[in-house]
Length: 173
Image (tube, rainbow, N blue to C red):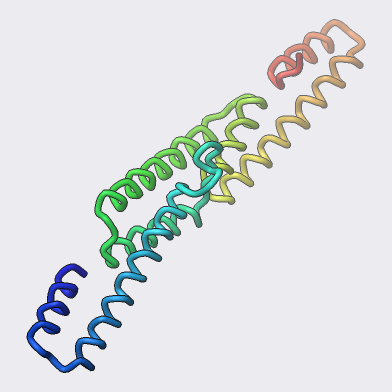
């Protein structure tokens, strides 16, 4: 952009055809507008203008949008510092998503799995993985309910011992 600005000034001073100078000025204006749009999109996709900085909610589409915004911003000549900042934000988003996916797979108790599902949803973990974890959570809750009922209805020592063991394994308080 700065090179085109200098060339326009030089062309005007040298008496180049005003139509050509005007055409170059139009092109310069288009380039500036593209750079401004790209900078705004970059900030938007980075979460700079959103509530998400304080309560981050990311998604796979948000990560993709930020990747696209970074490419466009780089091509449009947006300030390299802004692009670098967005790249750092993108890396943070990807790392959060990876941590959330790992926590989702390794969560073993009901409350841990509930928290992992919430974080995974917010961090943009694959919806199929989140859905699978939700199914696993539902099964765990159903097992806990069955164990609690068995505990309440156990009528002999051995039945009570078995019910206690199952209730303990199922997370009944």
